Image (cartoon, rainbow, N blue to C red):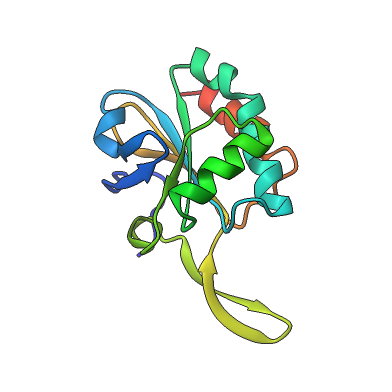
Length: 153
C-alpha cells in the first residue's frame, strides 16, 4: 500500500525519547512525518540537521516535524545528543508504521535486491489528509522544499 496526496494519513503510534508519539497528538494541526533509513549515517544526519535548523520556521506555521526509523529509542537519544537535533524522532522497530505509509520498499545495491526504508516525507494538513508526498528524497535542500510547501497549507 502506498500513501498518496489526497489520502487520509494513516494512524500511527511510535515510541519517542519522551514516550509514545501518536498521530492523534496532531489532531487538528498540520505536521510533517518523514521516514529515514538509519541514525548517524551521512544522508540521514544531513536530513535531521536540516529539519532541526528549520524547526522554528515550521513551528511558526503550527507544524511539528517527526522523523521515524527502525532504530531504537536508545539510538535516537544518542543521535539527538550527538548532533543537537531539535525535532522528535520515533522508533518503529517492527516497521508497521513505515509499511502503513508505503515506505518499506524493495531496493537494489550492487545488483543485490533487498527490502529497506524509502527516504520519504509526508506533509499532512490540519484535517489529517496528505497534502504532499516526497519519495526517494535527496537530502540537499529538502527541508526548505518541505517548508515552502507547508507555507501553502
